[in-house]
Image (cartoon, rainbow, N blue to C red; front, side, top):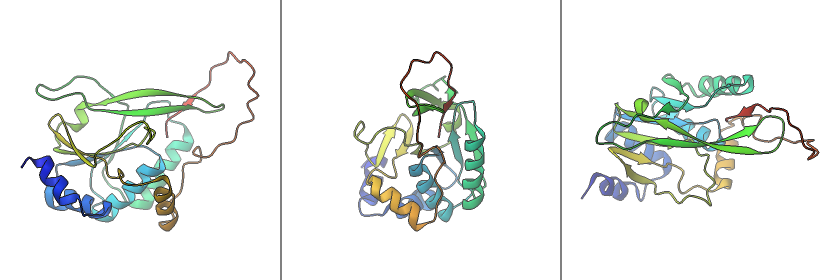
Length: 206
């Protein structure tokens, strides 16, 4: 039985929190990393991570410019959850190690002052080098677009999608139950009238 098959077998009956505890405490102590954004799904995962082991390495994926709302929200989340090993990554690590493959997170970048978004690929090869297990919790792909396994292999890494079984309602309920704040850009109303405007609009990662 391969390592992936073994972990899949063990995890099949585990809740998300119990799976994360098994990975962080029992299976990969000191060899596991989490990538996150400022989306609600990421915040749910970070809450569970913090409850298990707040020193777990967390890498926030975000391209500049970093808007003040995002910086303030990230600090609020980190302080509230008590995370103590947090770094930022702009996703420009494109060189792939020998025998490995390119490890990426895909993120939607939203216009700050009008509807619309664009997709960007963040390469994270260097920051993942020293780990054996990667909890991928950026969650910018639309659920209908991608089918994920909860436990998979990507190159030399065991890759975990902790919320593969969660619905949007599950995420919303977890946020409410744990009194977790949303990024203020998550719910926006626009007065954009659809007229052509050739100005430049700054864009948000969250």
